[in-house]
Length: 186
Image (cartoon, rainbow, N blue to C red; front, side, top):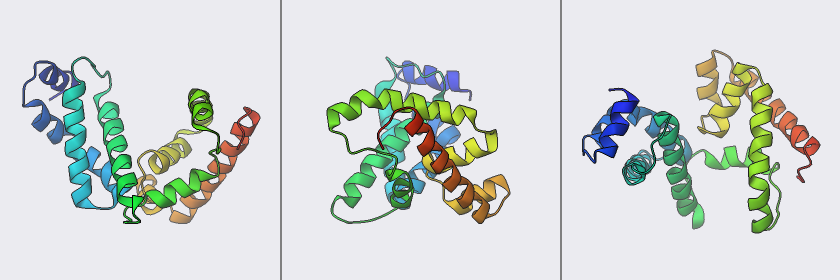
């Protein structure tokens, strides 16, 4: 079933929307949740919660790219679950390593200042990513959006884990420099 038909099911409040979504995007959403959480059980719950959020969002929202919409919902639900799971040092997932890698790029500004700068920071990161060759951009996105492990990225791109690690390290350094040039306090 194509994306437009699935979105139409949501808009028609047809309960077949969720099974159709699960059939087409279940593996994709589960991979995102599992990469963040490390727990198949938590991942399954987060994917189901993401489907429920999709149900509640459509209508009025009509996503133009359903996969990105579902990926974002799944990622947000999973990150919230990760925060809950780790609040009491309960652990889980690969998120700590991924977040630690980018931690040095985030300032400790007050919440109001952070919110004001958030959009400019997103524009700067988008600009940085747009300048990268497709392979490097793909590695960066797989690591820091989808939370893929270095070995998963190496397998996907047909290269070694060492090359992926070095590439990601260099990209983080270049991003750091790019953000400094853009006037972001790091």
